[in-house]
Length: 252
Image (cartoon, rainbow, N blue to C red; front, side):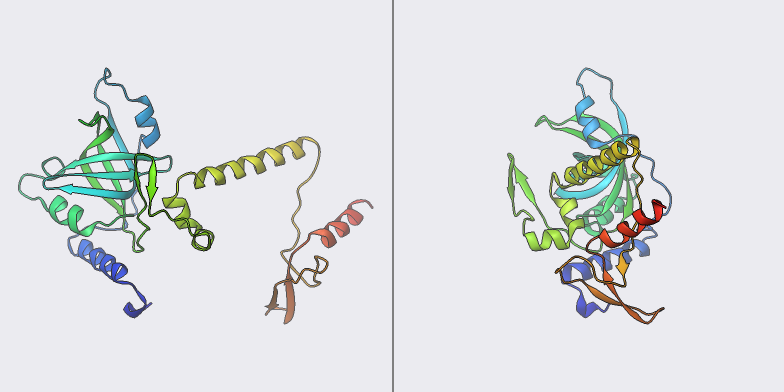
């Protein structure tokens, strides 16, 4: 892909990627980053009366508020989001503040994956957050995400265009709340259905996705060419033909 095909944001992100490498920071480290807590679990189990809890979390940086030597980011992991407080003096050694002044403020972008180690506390506004004591770059995002803003339960600039949502389900999963729950519920339904049918003595079988004979009554099938056999094939619409053959064969 040439630079002419990229947007300005994509070009900037690639420049930031190279700048990280020039600083000796691997933007895609292969080493595992061991986490020990999820955002929702941290928030639900927090208590002001308990001793200070050390946590290690990782996720996408979905928002960032820079205020001089200190900043707040919103970190999204596989279960939800949590606020992270980042102080320059906490994550940087006394003689080098590049991790905060250069890496965090200039070279990281929204959507990047970062790992944070620190302790849980409650801010002056009452929000449960993680006070970062170390920051690790885990993966650089080269594609910008839609910026969906939420305040007092009201969503602004939402990613709700049906055409884009269904063509880019990966973006829909990242930025829209509740979409992941639909995927999990569907998986649960299929798992339960399979379990019930299995207990009832049924056997699950596979039928060909590509068929040499078009099936599905009057529905117009998708046609493709099978190079190895030099014949046209039809995308499966109904499983009826092959299931009938299977029943006849199994009944002998």
